[in-house]
Amino acid sequence: MQHNNILILDFGSQYTQLIARRVRELNIYCEIHPFNKIPKNLEDYKAVILSGSPFSVRGENALHPDLSKIRGVKPVLAVCYGAQYLAHFSGGEVAPSNTREYGRAKLSFIKPNEAFFKNINEGSQVWMSHSDTIKHLPTNGVLLASTHDVKNAAYKIEGEETYAIQFHPEVYHSTDGKQLLENFLVHIANVEQDWTPQSFVEETVEDLQNNLGNDKVVLGLSGGVDSSVAAMLLHKAIGKNLYCIFVNNGLLRKNEFTDVLEQYKGMGLNVKGVDASARFLDALAGLSDPELKRKAIGRVFIEVFDDEAHLIENVKWLAQGTIYPDVIESVSATGGPSATIKSHHNVGGLPDYMKLKIVEPLKALFKDEVRRVGASMDMDATLLGRHPFPGPGLAIRILGDITAEKVRILQEVDAVFINGLKEWNLYDKVWQAGAMLLPVNSVGVMGDERTYEKCVALRAVESTDGMTADWVNLPYEFLQKTSNDIINKVKGVNRVVYDISSKPPATIEWE
Image (cartoon, rainbow, N blue to C red; front, side, top):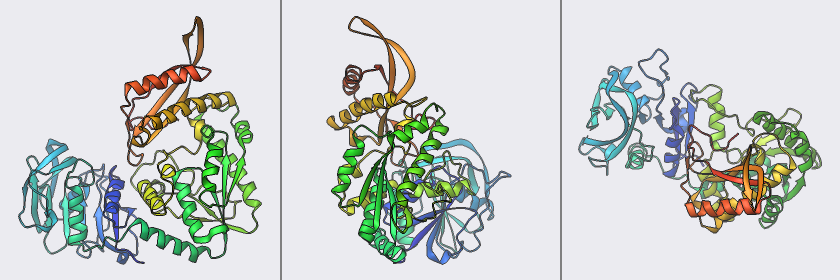
């Protein structure tokens, strides 16, 4: 089935992925491509959105897209940098702003009877984020909306379906942002809203059956949402030809290996559990540097996985739970303007000697969409609601070198914290939570004895996609009880602290 795709050209804005997620929420399929790598098959796209950017159109390093096959041919929505680009290089003028145009503003003027602003009233709040401003509209520009400080907040270009705005409709603070996107996509570009979890499952299963035929596929399960949903899609498509391997790297949460294997049995999946704990801990012995720890874990995982894959006769494909943000970041890193903080282990990370073809059923989906797809297949809500857990597991939550005793301590601490969140009905209000074992001993008193034991940090954040995150204001009573339980029940810990850093500038994990 051919969807009415939307093309989003990325100029490096931190909000580009948010634009895509807002478009997807309207049940419309969209793709992000770097501004300088415009797809050749433009006939596949019904409309184009130009993102914002950290660059200035007035600077020597201004980003110049080739819009010759887009403008006047497709409906275009230009956001922030896009709006300024169209003005500056098409007969208008962009200048440094006299006032700081950042944060909340209200629309003080809207051109009457304008389809672009249907069901949006004056006084509607929008989010500004720019240091330049459009002084003069481009040739054939028509003013559509203003705020108190920004006269040319929105305009259109006569003679083409091109609309431009100096604010960000994709962010939460633009109260009618979703309505504006709907006006443009549905009412102006006439895009059908046919991208649903059910349609995704049907089309993906059909595509997998066509591509895989009777071939055997091997998949590494992690117990997390992405690999589990990928497994269910493949299971629907090829049944017993899917071979799932769940590796215990010795760095999972307490009882996770047995609990997850039990859960997968109930889903009808063909799963083999492999306990390779000792092999991983041996490889980690004496390593303290976070990158070296990640590399060691990645190397041993591939070795273990390769050993197991060789036991399956005639396996042709390796399935991975890669999701869309991984793909976007990997593309941007090789040519787009967005900077990448970390490379993802499951994008192009396969060694040459594993001569398997790759299948990635989820590579078009964001995390929240993966959950919705899982729910549409009636997967267990507790599995779909699981917090993200890092691939290297507790190794990057134990700062410094890894020993079996440190893993035991952190597993016990983590179990108290996570079980407590569930008992207090706080687990589902948190995006991700976990405990960190710090390379710090501190003095304490237990009974009449002086202790010199470990300190642990608890971390709980709220987020929608992990790109940005705020620390969660957990109740003091909960933190008090959790701290007491950890210190009383976990031998080797005598101090508990709570991490109140947000991302950015901190990351969610400590390593």
